[in-house]
Length: 301
Ligand SMILES: NC(=O)c1ccc[n+]([C@@H]2O[C@H](COP(=O)([O-])OP(=O)(O)OC[C@H]3O[C@@H](n4cnc5c(N)ncnc54)[C@H](OP(=O)(O)O)[C@@H]3O)[C@@H](O)[C@H]2O)c1
Image 1 (cartoon, rainbow, N blue to C red):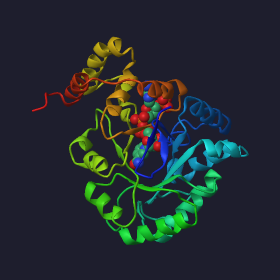
Image 2: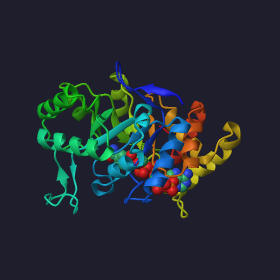
Image 3: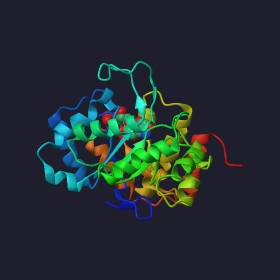
Image 4: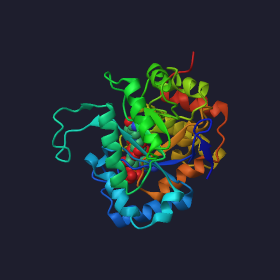
């Protein structure tokens, strides 16, 4: 599988990333055994990067992954682990949290990382992201936490998620960031135009895209009008590219020059394999615009 270097002197991650959000109680509730075999199958496909967050499964899904990889120390060198922190959820697993909010204090970041490392049964993470920008975040305080984590070897690289270009610029002044993880798909295209992807290219960092299948909306029984239009265009393109509907949806993202790394949220290996096949597709400009036009319901100006 093709790899992407996230930034100058940054880490190399598999172009396709496995998203772990729905593996546990927030979705498919995989058994430890099923999660273990799915990890092996992903690695066999070359999908060696796994995207976690402390909150997934109300703070339980990292531990599912940790159990699934327990006792297989050789696996750790084969994979890259991402996690995120900064959101506080109200749940019996965190009885002290009274309000759903954000916390980017140094104490919270350090606390969250300790929990992630313990749950994932690893000594380090390849990448830690601030999950969402908080109005109360202070870049200096976040940088202090990041520097301490880097020096201790617990976190190798840092990034952000859902940050606007100005929020990215502010934090990047204090600590080098290697990615901005954002929602991008044909049904969620605001980042094509708001400067976020331009900024990634300016800084030579590769963005990561989540909800690339619009959380399953592309496949819903009652397809919305944009989805019906997109499907119609894909039907015409399938033969030309010898590709399926889902492969074309992923190929559309991969064609962007910002070198987007799609995070694939499926728990089915055949769907993950389709994403991997999409990496081989070079979508022509005219087809890219035909799909964008179908999604927007109008021609570009
Ligand atoms: N940074 C953030 O704020 C943030 C936010 C959300 C998500 N994420 C990350 O991004 C990952 C993906 O996000 P997501 O789950 O929203 O992504 P998604 O890929 O858009 O949606 C996944 C859902 O779509 C279904 N699906 C996928 N392919 C399908 C197909 N070919 N046919 C029918 N259904 C299909 C999946 O079901 P099956 O499992 O049955 O295939 C799953 O329920 C997460 O796991 C997480 O790591 C990050």
